[in-house]
Image 1: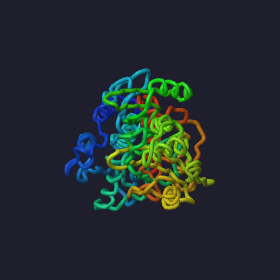
Image 2: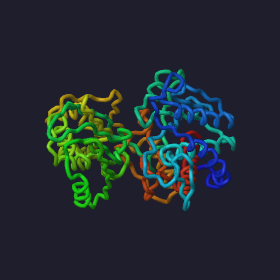
Image 3: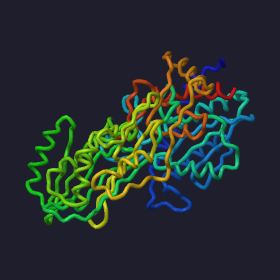
Image 4: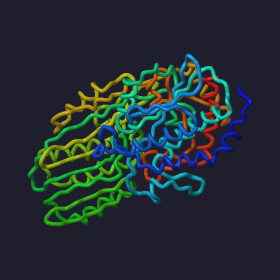
Length: 468
């Protein structure tokens, strides 16, 4: 082991690290395809965040490469083998329910609040400073390190598709992504979004004009809004519904005008890989609406959501449930909802599936659902990924974690997808510690400052141990 006191080195750089991180956190880098163009492939925000990160790297003496505003990278050190570090600068939409401006970072009670503080600007910057310490000290390394940052991790990975297609250099031999949990994530379930399509036309006693929910497929929808007509006594019925589901802490809004009612139900957002941590506002709105006499596509849409999708986090009622001894159970998140009486209704179901099942088996089950006229899939399917504990990459990273925490390391398989899976010998490593509250993809996302600085210490020594 090196004799460098990495804790002391991080201590010297705390203020500088936070200053750089704040610059990134002030940028709303959620995907914005309405304003996307050739120069801004995922919208102005992600591109602005990439520009800022590469500007910081150039300031610190790295020669950077920008791949048409999809991805950027820089390299450090010499050697035939390449250690890849994959971070991302895009974020999920802020959503509602924040106690402070999500894009004006704020420190309260030792916690840094901002969208991206935990996922993934905070961890990416902690890792960046881990490498910067080695560079500042001139520590000799036998491997080259390539630090890669993407701008579309949250919504499709088209950034990395572009990078792998256009990168003129050999791809890294092994590596990690600072975008998950300690001690290590060496297994990741498969990931696919499948879309249920329904007929939008309906003209029954009660009409569903529209239904909307969800900001991203990998987020549990905090709220859902429907416009209906023909229903009566809605205020009293909504009050009774919220009371009947008091354990869910639901809230509602109701506006009635020109014979139409706009009903909104509020639940709780969560990361789509762990839907059980949230309260899906869309399924609970459907549960409320299921008491009314909708017809045709609207009836099928509401009934499926209210009776099958609600709280069906592993797909038991849906029929897609599957459990693998190593990788665990399938999870299902009903993330984005749209219903238009003049078109169609869609529900985006995001599945995290273990080895032993696949997207086609899931699709076959969905196609048999009553009232579903078609099932389609997204074009970016991730297969299950696993790096054994015996691999030197895994054992080294766990050893460094154990040294700095005093805790026993162990392997973990998650439903979330990280850039660690881009490489055959790739894992996710931090930056969330055991016992730390997971606020990724939620309102009031935060990262404890002591955990942020500790992760920088671990990253510094981990990079050294992997590349020395």
